[in-house]
Every structure is written in C-alpha cells, then in structure tokens.
Length: 338
Image (cartoon, rainbow, N blue to C red; front, side, top):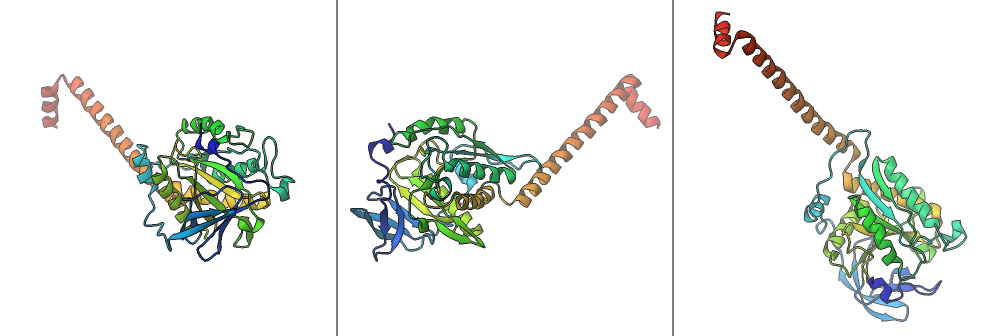
C-alpha cells in the first residue's frame, strides 16, 4: 500500500490550505493537504518549513533566505553516474534525442474555463496538456514515451495503480519521467506573464517519504535552476510534500503541476511548452552544441574508419605481393632489385 493511501490527500472542493511566512505573507495556496515538516522552495529560492497547522493555515519558519540552488545542484552526468546509468550520447542530426517518459496518475483532472468542469471521467483536460508537452519535446527532436493509461478513479489508490505505468516507462530506460498534473488552487496562484503571453506556472512536487529524496531534491533544484536561467518565473516553486508519489521507483520521476483547475487549459499548454524547452536544454544541452558534439564524434569515427580501411587495403596488397613473389625472401629480393 502506498503511503498516499493512508490519509486524504485533498480537501473538499473549493477549500484551500494557505501556507504563510512568519510575517503572514502567502507563500502558496492549494487544495492539497499540507502537513508539519513539509517544505517549500519559492520562486526566488527562499526555503520555508511548516511548523504548525491551524485549520487550513500552515505556519512556517524560514530555513534559508536564499538557497543557492546552483551550488546545491547536481549535473545530469552526476545523477546518471550515481544511478549506474550511461551518460546521454550525442545523436545524429535528424534523429531523435534521448527519451523522456510522460504519464498522468490523475487522468480526470481538467480545467474549468476550458473544459467546463474540474474533472472528466476518463481522459480529462490534463491529457491535452500532456500531449502538448510531448509534442513540444518531439518538435525539439526529443523522443517521448507518452502513456495515457488510465488510473481512475481519482482517489487514494491512484498512485498504487499508476505504479505499474511508471515501471513500464522505466523498462524503456528513459532519461527522466514526468507525472503531469494540475493543482487545485485560486486562479491567481499560478497565473504569470512571460514576455507577451499569459501562462500558468509549473510547480514541482517532491515526496519527502522515499529513499531517493536526496537526489530528488538536487534534481528538482537543478531543473529549476535551468528554468530560472531560461524563463525566470516559469517555475512557481518546489513543494517538498508528505508522500512518495512513486518517486521511490526512480529519483528522476518528478511530479509537476501545470496550473490549477481555475486556469484555462490553453494557458497551461503555453506554460508546459516553455517547460519542454527547459527539459530539452537541461538533459541534452544547447541544440547547436549537440550537433557540434555529434559532428566531432562522428568525424572522429569516420577518420578511424577510413584509417582501418586504408590499413586493411595496404595489408591485403602486401600479402598478395608476397604470395605472387613466392615468399618473403623472394619479395624482398624483388623490391631490392627495383
């Protein structure tokens, strides 16, 4: 039984928990239950820890006023080495890069302004967001394994049912897996403007109750650092919540919230499409660099191949010459006469 099945994960409809700073400022609002010792890393990298729950208010203490997520981050190469995995290789131009897995534990999640309801019995609006995420990655040249397997209903057993989907995706040896959700929160909780477009922000959720928490934390912070560099404000924050969310199966399995039920699905799609660029950059580097890496690797391989062909032809010619001359002594004698 998953730990998520031992308690109610969500409040009643239209009820929200509010996490506040010691000064009473709102850190985040969500219909997800918040517990003591949960932590939250804000968009500007302040780290808070919940010390008290009073009704639907979670009171916090400031743990760090400015977490240096770049200093505490871990490179993808380090992560893969720690997990005993091979490093990501440069790919031939025109071929897909790597493999990213995508799935939905809560398939019914939907967006009221676009879908007309917050929940659809089957493939909810979140599937359109997941499909857009997959398409954006594929357009960037990334191979995607997208599972639309259903884990209904949206109850405490959903994570247990989605566990088999995670294992199926892991069998394909992906570089990472994303469990795509939408939160339940007031409309302004996720609304943000990047450039000229209104989007919904992306929130990471890391389960505190799994043996991979250390790497999970560093990975999430590293990915946020990449997002902060490319699109400041795209990542709303990282919620270190009670539970494991199947992250015990892989430290590179990350739960992401693409907006809330009160936001439009179109805004969520715009946000997650930007996030696809972050994922592509974080895992595979700048696209022009990837092409240079391939040409360097491919060029070196081509030189080695030509050298071996040359040596083979030369050796073959020498052998035939020796045979035709009647042996090594005769061949050397013939060469001296020349």
